[in-house]
Amino acid sequence: MSYKLTNLIQAIDHQAKDNRASCYWDDQGHHPYQDLYQQSSCLAAYLQTLNLPKKSPIIIYGDQSFLMIVTMLAVVKAGYAYIPVDADSPQERLIQIQQIAQPAAIIGVVELPLTLSLPTITRMDLQEHLDYQTTAWDTSQSVQGEDNFYIIFTSGTTGVPKGVQISHDNLLSYVNWMLNDFNLPAKVRCLSQPPYSFDLSVMDLYPTLVLGGELVALSHAVTANFAQLFQVLPTYDLEEWVSTPSFVELCLLDKNFQQKNYPRLHHFLFCGEELTHTTATNLLQRFPEAQIFNTYGPTEACVAVTAIQITNVLLKQYSRLPIGYAKADTKIWLVDDKQQSATAGEIMISGPSVSKGYLHNPQKTQQAFFQAQDQWTYRSGDLATMNADGLIFYRGRTDFQVKLHGFRIELEDIDQNLSALPQVDQAITVPRYDANHKVVQLIAYVVLNQPLTNASAVLKKELAATVMEYMVPQRIEIRSQLPQTANGKIDRKALMAEVNQHD
Amino acid sequence: MDTKETVLNILADLVGTDDVKTNLDQPLFTSGLLDSMATVQMLLELQQQLGIDVPVSEFNREEWETPNKIIAKVDSLRNE
Image (cartoon, rainbow over all chains, first blue to last red):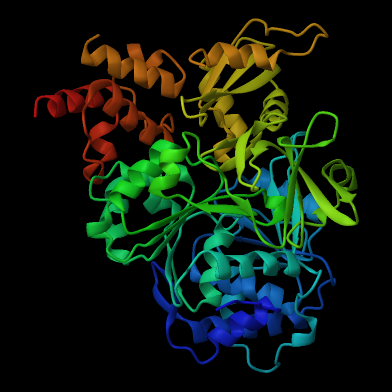
């Protein structure tokens, strides 16, 4: 069967209306599709009565819960793009996102940590309007075509996040690919572990809903508590697993994480960072009946644009695993230093899932996006090599962007935020890699402008107030001076060599 | 290298300060020094460097809260 969905909201509603099967399982229990349909429609009608500015996005601040996805769906039904902000984010990030996005409103699915000067819909308001019946929602206003569907904020080199705009049609191209190329069964039961502010979550969310399946929410708190995690995981009767390779590596620490205890788990989908040969080999031994897919893609091209199934044959063939082939509607090519097409170089991506650019940031948009033979193209900053038949192998970055446990971080972003602290004169952040090219740790070297006792702990704590938790370096070392390059810049590469001597 | 030294080197590396080598009773989790991904890293290092398999499904933070508790835990697992 080949899927050619043309409208994502209608496809979900078609699945959800009058359907008593569960679409979501969280700590409140199982939630039927008809509740998703009913509640998101009612909430959409309510949002439309508020006469919020058209074409402006709405921030949704929330967690891994049914009310979160009801709200996300309600916002697009009402005709607005949503900006998901995880409830674990520092207040400062919420303020920054508000300043950049100029949203029409903010919705607190959980209690908001501060009051912003814009229309605010609290959790209580939400709950009061889940069965709002007086007005039907106006479907003609719903997000469609080139309208933004969601905007996800990612690390920016200047220390300020960038909002990647993903349109309905970008997402549609992605979802159709997922439905057609990954052999997912109808009504699949899928793990929902990454936070909704991280676009990896889109890989579990929309394909599962369109397939009439059930999402099983795994909260941050459970993920962090290993005893609880390994107690609940086998009880979920999962069929599909979507996560970063880092998260499955954690799970592989548990000897009971194997096919016998997860008899229906037949699909593993990975994205967000490099899937190592060791991890894939180990996983395929534990789950011999499973199909394991490695995928690759920047947020700017909507979650993922290449994929390949990792089989025993492939593991024998390659010591460093490929990221796969481009999806059918997308063109990927590599360019060398001279901007010429090559078999090794920077990955260029064009196709219907490529974002229109960064919200309210024409300068960064112009740096990263361009027209190539009338095709809107994203310059990824990722280096790769390509086989004659189009198989792609990731080889690193052109810049100082890293992935730590799947989270995308511009090292300059951390430098900027550290340097902005009052006690800091200079700061530079470097990644430490393991033997499999994976970043295991971030280390910041800091020159202080004043004596500071317990400096590492103090700086970590202050930094955590402005950046996401995953951007706080594990180690902060105080130095009296930092190495410099010939033209007087801090020499990041020298420090990288120092901390990665095993290479 | 004995167990204690190996454990302390692993911890100092993960936490980013040598304090853990001198103050063996300082809390690591409640203080935020070790987050969940760093904990995974610690368990992997213990597995690789000392050959011990930590039953991660029984992992209880309270039993691993300080460098001293971790050393005792590792010793008991090695003697099993």
